[in-house]
Amino acid sequence: MKKAWIAEILLVGVAAGWGLGFPVMKIAVDETPVLTVLWLRFMLSALLLLPFCFGSLKKISSKTFFTGCLLGILLGTSFIFLITGLQMTTASNTGFLAGLAVIWVLLLSAPLSGKLPSIEAVLATVFGLMGLIVMSDFSSTQIQWGEILVVIGSLFSALHIVVLDKVTNQHNNSVLTFIEIATIAILIFIIQAINTPNNLLPNNWSNSLITALIITSVFSTVLAFWIQTAYQRYTTPTRAVLIYNLEPVFSALFAVWLLNETLSSDVFVGGGLILIGMCFPSLFTLFKKRKMVSDLSH
Image 1 (cartoon, rainbow, N blue to C red):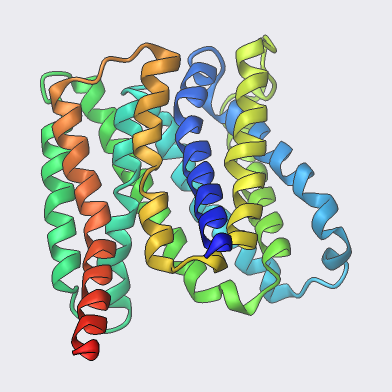
Image 2 (cartoon, helix red, strand yellow; image 1 turned 180 degrees about the horizontal axis):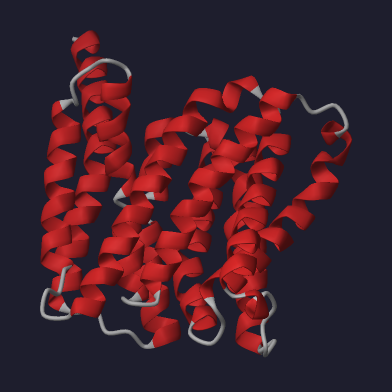
C-alpha cells in the first residue's frame, strides 16, 4: 500500500511535468522556430538517455531498430502538429485538446481488434467532441486552425499509443525509447534543414529557450519515462490512466501562472467535458470492478 501511494504521487509528478511542457514550449516557440526548438529538445533527451542504454545498443536487432523508427515517426509527427497548433491557440486549450488522444485510443483499439467500440468509448467520444465544440472559437480563423492542428496531433499521439501497446513487450524498452527519441530529433532536423536551413540553430539562446529545453527534455521526457517504467507497476493501469488525465489540468494551471492566460467560461466548460470524457472509461472500469467485488462478497 505504501509503495502504491508513493508510486501514484510520482505519477502525478509525471502528469505535472507533461502539463508544464505546453506553456513552457509556448514561451520558447514565440521567439524561436517550432522545428528548431523540437529537434533540439529531442536531441538533448536522446543524449541524456544514451548512457542508460549504451551497452544494449551494441546488440540491437533490426526489428527493434525499425520499430523504434516507426514509433519516432508517429510521435514526431504528433509533436509537429501539437506545437505548431500551440502557436495559434492558448497553452490551456492545447493541453485539453491534446488529451483527446485518450479518447481516440478507445475508438482505434476496438476496430483494430475486430470489435465494435464499447459503450464507454462511445460516451467518452461524445463528451470529447462536445468539449471540442464548446472550446472552438469559430469567430477567429487563426484560433480555429490552431485547435484543428492540435486535434490532428492528438490523433497521431493515439496511433503512437496503440502501436506502442502492441510492441512494448517485444523489445528492450530503454533501447526502444532511445531509438524513438533519436528518430524524432533526426526527422525534425531533416525537415528543418530542407525547409529553412538558416534556422537550424537559434539566433538567440535566450534564458526562456534554454529553460524550455531543459524542462521538456529532463522532466517531460527522460524523468517521465523513468518514473513510468519504475513505478507504474505498483498501481493499477486504470488508476494510472486517471492520474495521467490530470495533464491538461496542470497545463491550464501553469498557463495561468506562467503566461497569465485567462480561462474563459468556454475553456472551463469545454475542458471539463473533455476531462470527463477522458476519465469516464477508467471510472467505468473501477465501478464494474467494485460492483463485482460487492456481488462476490454477498
